[in-house]
Image (cartoon, rainbow, N blue to C red; front, side, top):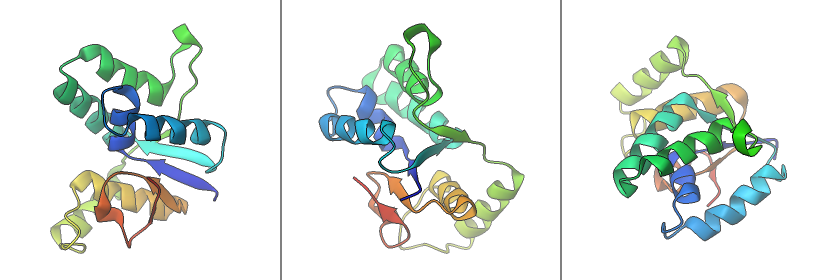
Length: 144
């Protein structure tokens, strides 16, 4: 496998020790850091979604900041970025909107962010996603 996309639920569970999936995601994160899945990617939309959801679920800004540091890295603790951050540009946005508004995957219940992920994965040839979202099933290989 040459690359993997890391989705929102992955980051939320990784930063929140009380999350039911924390231990499983921690183990998966170790494999990601060791390169088992190739280059890990995420996006600015996932970054936003992850910080916001972590803050809402935990009520703790420090946990949301931790998610940001996991994604971006943090020199203060010699923490390397976990994933390469992709930016949703106008082209990705427009193609995701086209898919979303045409209800291309209407039976999948995918969010707009999920549509941007699918466009970016296709553009870069990313084969797998670390996600808890079963809406990706049948569209890309889901690891988790």
